[in-house]
Length: 101
Image 1 (tube, rainbow, N blue to C red):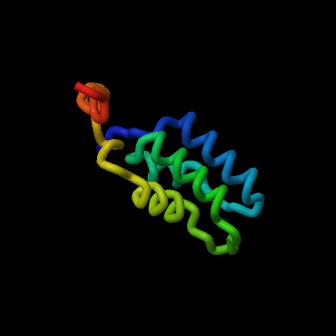
Image 2: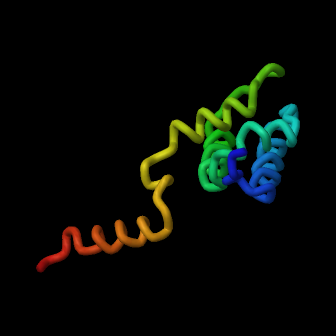
Image 3: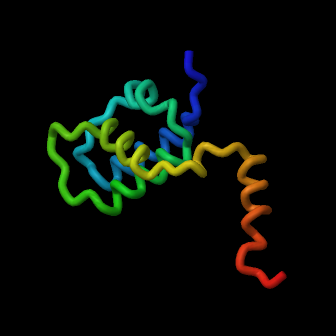
């Protein structure tokens, strides 16, 4: 199977935030885990915060799993896929940009 990227702690805290912001939110935590576990914590957290900050209305049929996934994928950048070593190398390479020789 697919190795989960999303930790249970991150899923739990993000679902709690959604329920706090949208009290009528109906979401099965087990199904959310199955459908979102391929996404890293950072993307799910960013997507959840974006939804809480920008979603004005919700409806009884709102598919929260799809809302989180689509928001996460829309916000994803190539930098989200880099390994720790690749991020460090990129930071090193770009640190000198704009500095006088």
